[in-house]
Structure formats: structure tokens, C-alpha cells
Image 1 (cartoon, rainbow, N blue to C red):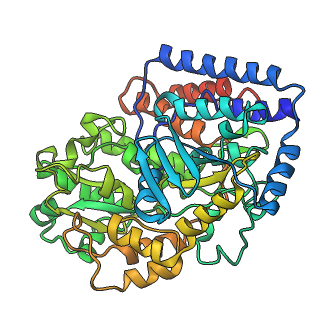
Image 2: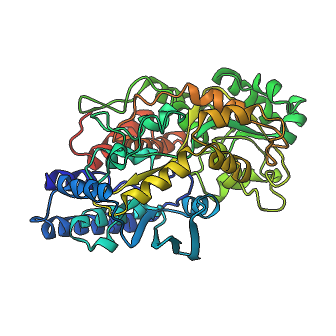
Image 3: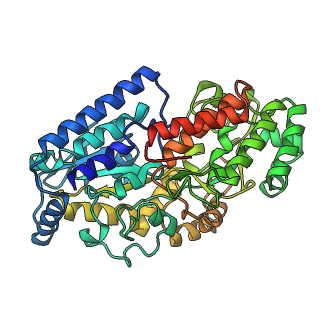
Length: 483
């Protein structure tokens, strides 16, 4: 069992995260990536050797349940995450939390320690993996109690026994009845066991530059703009119109990738063989046409070239994303940006999709099960807290009743969207999300496919050559796969 679990965590330890969820990462050099991957593998091997005689995760889980039943609580709550988003949510909305300093807090008699490692070059997962592998031998106050995960690699942890079943915390289906089903599907293991909970939903829309819409399309009304982007054929026709006026319809082909990849009819891997869905190939076809026509670029997400469109002089018409993108990642606090001026609008776009999200997991072996239960219930199920997060943080929360009510609330509006209330669009989009084609290989396959196709889009490789680059990279990453 130990070797199997080590293998599960190592399987994705060398995957470099582009971005998923509510924080960004930048790409490092190949040598840096290799170094981190090797370091993670060495750490995991050391942990396996050190723990060879240690108790199995099942035994640690039994101890956690026993501690919860007796009401015992540890003195330290260790939380692992990749940015400060959840820490900010706790500080602002969990009444019993008191901030001590940048990495420490207090909840009653329990000291909260935040271990924050950025996702750049997969550093967060590498750190988390190495620490989880030593979990059983760690001193009680040094064990991981809670850790956060993102959708792209959720199954890597959900399908391991390092995550506690949510039911073992005493949280029931009734407690989570208002949450969107897709947020549960993402963190449900192969046996149907729920292993994580999220406070947010991340359905996506198309954010458009209102000034550009008025100039080129003659209107910035969301319903009217939607007619110009209602499907991919119309989207491409609008791209040609925008080009004549000096605008790119998107900053990069990568902006639309998740819209296509969220609407596939089959997973990346079928019976151990790499499978490229027809809708992924449609992204290639449509993207190549846009690039060849000079209607979009091939920039990496989070690069300076990509983010130039956050400003009027960047001449970019739209970006695809969920609420967190326009509110937290598009320079809303920077004077002169489109968001700062309330200059974006939201339309449904060609297809519904989601991007990212953050899930809370309880680590097997925690001695703070009762406290974790209270944090999860407060931060993900309490109607008043959920509404606070919508109103104060402009986020989309994982509560159907709250979101439906807020969608009809005339007093709510988004400053960055020029006073528009986009919540009805989000609510409509989230109801149609289908996560049935998720697989543990999604992060690696999505990243390597975009990397390979960049060569094709920039005419540095034929399509067949780019596909071969993709297959080779994926099999190198996941030797158990064929193509």
C-alpha cells in the first residue's frame, strides 16, 4: 500500500502547473523544472524509505476518527496552500479567526500556521507531496491538518488515502445540499466518496471591452453583444470585423482553450491510450485560423503580452474566465486599467465552461477534525457567510440558494463590469457543467497539448509534427500510457 500511495503522489509531481484556480504561476527554465522534479522524487523516495515500517494511512484515519469522537483537539492547525486567497477568506469571514502575523493566526486555543508555497514550477505540489509522505511519522503539531487543491490535479489527491472522507468529519449530505453538484464531482473518488469541499464555484463567461464593443459593434449591451459571440462561427466572423478596427478578439488562443476542453465528449485517456477529443481538435482548427488571420496571438497566459489587453491601449476585445479572473487578475486595482474604470461587460459567449476553483481537504492523521469540520461548515455552507463573500469579495459562491437570490437582487452590481449584475449568467452556466470526463491525466495532457500546438500555430511544425511532440511528451510524463 505504501509504495502504491507514493507512486500516486509521484505520478504528477513532475507536472508544471500553468494555472488553475485563483492564483497564477509563471514558467521556469527547463533546468529549474528538472531540478524541482528530481528534488521531489528524491524527497518522496526518502520518505518512502523512512516510513517503510510506519502505520498505514488506514490506521492514521482510524486515529483521526477516534480523536474526533472524543473531542480531542491539537494545539496547532497546519494549513497548506499556494496563495493567500483562503487565508484572506478566513480572516474576513471566519469570526473566531484572529490574525497574528503574515503566516500565523489563532482560533481559540489553537495556533493556525499557514504554509504557503506558490504554484510556480509545481513547487506547491512538490512541497505538499513530500510532506504528506512523512505525515505518519511527524509530530502531532507538525502534521498537515488541512490542504487546498485545484481541479486540474484534484484526483491525484482525492484518489489517495492522504485525504479524509468528508463524512468522517461528521459532515452530512444534508449539510452540503445547497452546493453545486459539479463541485462535488471534482473531488469524489472512484468509490463515490467525497474528499473535499469548496466555498466557490467557477463558471465562466466572456468578458468584453465595453469601449471596443461600442466603437466596433455599436453597442455594449450584454444581450446584443452576445449575438456577436453566440457560437464559434459567429465569433470568428466578429474577429474579422474587430481586426479591421485594430482590435484582436482575444489576446491569445490559450484564452479560449478551456472553453473547448470543458465541452469534450470523452476523457484524455481511454483504456490506457491517449485520446484527443474532437472538440479539442476544433480548438486547434479555429485557433489556427484566427492566428493566421492576425486576429489573436499565441502568448502564454499570465505573460506581460497576454495581460496588455487589461488596458485600453492593449486593443483586446475579450477574455474568457470566471468571476475571479476579472475581479482579481485583470488589474482592477490599477489606475488606468479597463477593470479599474468599470469598463468590462459580461456575455455568455459561445459555450459554457468553468475554470479553476479551490477545494478544502482534511489530511488523514489530523488531530483537529472537529475544528476542520467547523471551518468547512462555516466557510462553505453558512448562508450569511456565503452572501458576505459575494457582496464584499465579488466572488461566486458554492451555494445555489444564495446565488439565485443574489442574481435577482437589484442592489447588487459589479464595479468592474460597469454596474452589471452577471450572476444570472454564472448561475445558468454552472447548472450545465459536466465533469464526467475528468481524469488524473488532465493537467499534464492539457499543458502538453497547448505547448505542442504553439509550434503549429507559429508555423514551426506541421500539425502531425506537433501531435507527435504532444504524444511523446505525455508518454514521457506518464509511461503507463500509449497512443
